[in-house]
Length: 255
Ligand code: G
Ligand code: G
Ligand code: MN
Ligand code: NA
Image 1 (cartoon, rainbow, N blue to C red):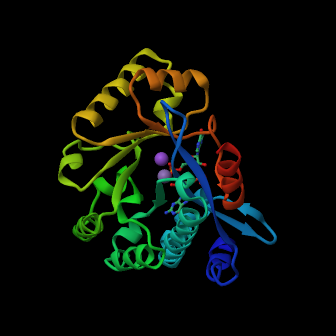
Image 2: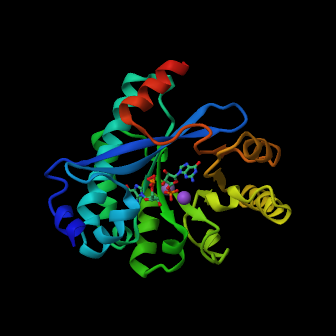
């Protein structure tokens, strides 16, 4: 209830901010993109993580204004980086979108407005939707996904492998990228899981989807993924999520 009360005017109190985690091209180590991750800095409670408040925000309907804030703020920052960092700017921006947002047909206009306002090439924007959302889809969300895809925006299946995906959804829905859940990577040393990861990398490649491995924490995991032909990844081995300033410093320091 405390969270619920505090969430009501969280945007006007200016307590939400976005952190960014790099997405890396595994072969070269080059920065490919950034994923925006929401952070709530509460004056009394300190940092509240999204897993603690997004479910409540969804129940209350607050996820709509919060989600709109995230899209606008991430695009604003990304547009700024494109100008200030030029060729060193990340090529792609990944933004998480929850089920409730996808059920709102107005999401399309919100996204269109943001890419227009900040002069962002639509194909550089990736909207991440969890597997469970894609699978238990309402008619509205499918339509919304199709309209977003028609804008040129890319759709990523987040946490892939945690649900029980019907693989046919990968063909029926306008999906561009699979984000392999970190639970897979954690267990990649086991024989069967290792083979499963390899098979999924091949599958993605065969059906023309890009694949991003999540939760890479050790050099061994990276080596295994590189040898398996996995193209992109993110995780604490490269960087934890950083404030916009730290992200920018990190880019400037490595150029
Ligand atoms: O770092 P991490 O604790 O940020 O994120 C935890 C979970 O919260 C992840 O599943 C992530 O997808 C989700 N999440 C993070 N930021 C956002 C956001 O802006 N919108 C939505 N809907 N989910 C987010
Ligand atoms: O949107 P998604 O569910 O993919 O959110 C990514 C989540 O994973 C965020 O909470 C982020 O902070 C977290 N994360 C990013 N890299 C790592 C990692 O290497 N290990 C673990 N355990 N979590 C990570
Ligand atoms: Mn994500
Ligand atoms: Na994920």
